[in-house]
Length: 529
Ligand code: KIV
Ligand code: ZN
Image 1: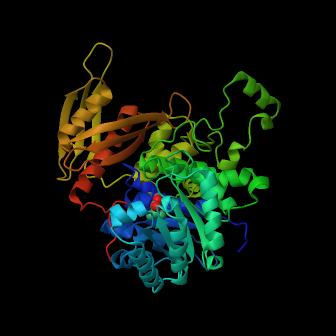
Image 2: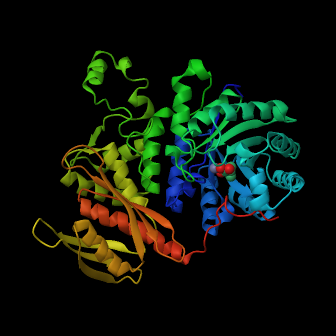
Image 3: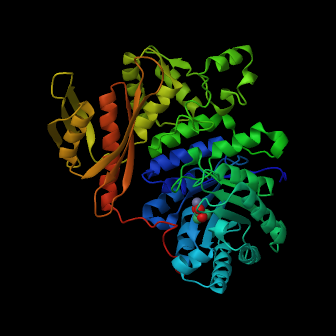
């Protein structure tokens, strides 16, 4: 393998999914995994199989369907996370064994704070556990990653001992997490260099960086790590993840791409897929991308100041260090209109990477025709929003059948909603609110009866123009005893319909989750042997 190649380990579906409210349905996870494969990531961390039977099943499906391909095709490694105990490792192996290239990623904390308060283990016990569990994982699989959790706050001398034991027991990748986003680029780069230099057997392993963004230094720390010799970067799309998030994939990849003279390193990422992947993850997780987010934010390539615009007209190099096309941002292309036929529609979906069966294609085509009747031009962005709205919604416990809203300046905004319930009956309710969306949500609440608080509501137009498709994202929190956050998205040319769909999608997730056993959280539970 090229010494200058940096492996991209994407953990959007595991650490990213640990963002509050980001919980994804199984079909959403599968679709994101397919897109990550298209993007060209080397490793997909598909989940934490011991967290719940649903998580195990989602990882299993990704391993079988995304982790395999025709002979000679480049397929990503599929990794699953496991605490350093037999039960987690067994579940992880059960989930990933169907992949052509499976990887078990096991971890144990090494900082004194975690040993004393969380694990209640001595350093010797940690060394013994690492020896036993890496050996156990290796009995299933040749590709083993070990992470000393909270490495950023661990004693480097102890880390060297732990990593030495992990390599001697069969670990092939050593991932160094700055779990709480505490280190600075200088410190983290030096830590990686020291570990590579002093760990016995380090020449047989790939060193990896896994940073969190609590102090806004995750990308800088990861870049410092690769300059110091790490050859794997653990990242998420849009930088989503625990608390302030993880290192953002697009930032690391584009820094390496744009500054070859500084880094002299390369990745296997198809950068033209970045914008699309970002959009998909934002939609499915209901976590909007801030407009000024590097690389994928709506303003990342916008030039507002007159002096900048003038410079850009003279030469793009004046204010642009990357071309928008390089990351897949281009003016929405006009693709289809109301006279386009089924064949043209299918060809466009194929080109966008959506492989629908005949039944789903019929359904999508009907939605497209409806849209094309209302909207003159249907663009790639419209098609992506339409497919997400139609197919990547959570299980529909309640379905929006109809909605009618009356609003205006001098009346009482009123919404009448009809939902098809799990009992297959139609339920009607009318409510008055402070505005049409409020009235709609009150009517839906009265039918669904799942007490919750709306945390966030955002709406944006998919494309420019008065006839644009509106896309709504909501996040809500279930009430006591155990508050949990759920997100939902919906798209329609009628923004009240889009708002109703988004709210209902989040409520459907809440209703389903209420019936399930609670998930185990990787970082907050003690590893038992
Ligand atoms: O941040 C962290 O320490 C992790 C590990 C499980 C790798 O996510
Ligand atoms: Zn993490």
